[in-house]
Length: 108
Length: 223
Length: 220
Image 1: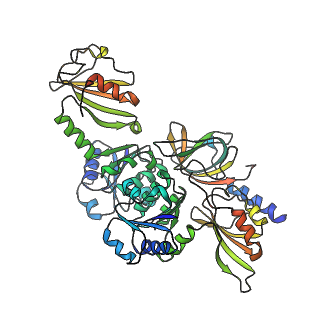
Image 2: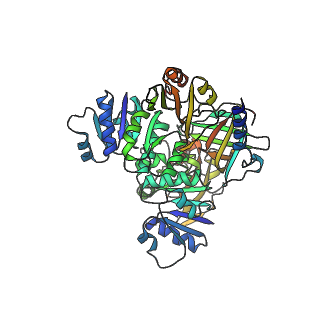
Image 3: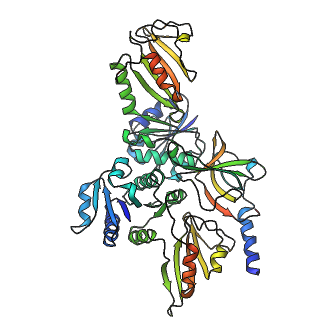
């Protein structure tokens, strides 16, 4: 049990300090953000599938788009995600294209 | 504007020259020191390196560039450079050159490309335009293919000849941008009566192309 | 299964020959027909001369039936294009690309493409990537009580907690994600594309295999 308690704290620091609140996110700056998936859709673009996810952390929202797939295992509505990448200004708002992601256990 | 050009071949160097003269902050990237160093004039910055590498694009200033142009002679390189520029640097506008028309289908948001330019395609369009009176010629695509700039030289048989622009029934999603008549550009007001041999430049959005064609060219056009 | 190998260099020809010997249907694609000589007289399979990201070439290679595409030409960029077309346009799940540049490799891994780098063990790595259903044994202790096995996480296992995997009897020694290796924490959630190395008793091996379930399944 002590082992598990310690490791939960380690994961908390993985997320915490260097994450940019979505409300303060700027385009074109490499950032780590975390939030909850509030919307998800498989969106075809020119006959190719893509997965579009809207993330919300209470301070703002951002979009993540992964091209060429309709789903990613573990990414579901309500899931907490950590994303890392550079956001682009787009019609749907600040968008991360094919970002690196981490699935987070609930409570982040 | 800050512009990064990947590819110091004749196209890249020409672009660098023109854009620098227009007052933009230009950086050119190429892996070949000879290609980079050919011109004495130091109007633009140079970065020696493989533009398909993130570090090199970073050194070239992609993080703050307004436009990144991938204009090497290699489609694979242009697509990868475009993807990195969009995905890793958030470049607002990525322009890429299509070398082999067979690869044109990949030049879109899948690879981060906002605008693609295919010289063979443009040349064909211009040839078509020179050869065919009465044909509907697509010059450029915009908005990821959703909008087209097209040109029609009105033949005497065109249903639009003799009628004012406002009365030919163009759909809402299209607009006449200009009319070139006897070498002059004429403002396309609604009451401008179209004439045989007028070159009509029209912007067509979405599904209305077929309708615009039948209005300007006529229904019996054989392509 | 039907596999398309693009690039008939040392790696491509070696893998194509191995796959063919194992009974798979193999088509090798290369720009230069002279490269097909490397396959040898006894190679059972087809060849198509052409560019691997060209749709007509892929169709000649019967991509609609393919279960896997290996992009192992000399060019990183060609391999990326081939891999993305195969995966995104044709829905091929098992796509491997050889990418030498580690920075670019990490980027493409985020697109769900498995990448291999070094030529020397590329063939072996590729072959094991193509057979994800069983745990690949990397090491076993002298008494064969414990084995270190390697698995790739597929879509069905993604989202499950490492702690669940460990409760089936193994201890996760290392987790490699997006090209970076790390010592995982028990609360980590497994993600598609993760490569895990698990130390497990031979007795618990079947439970670990069961945890990972069947392979990635059908097309997306």
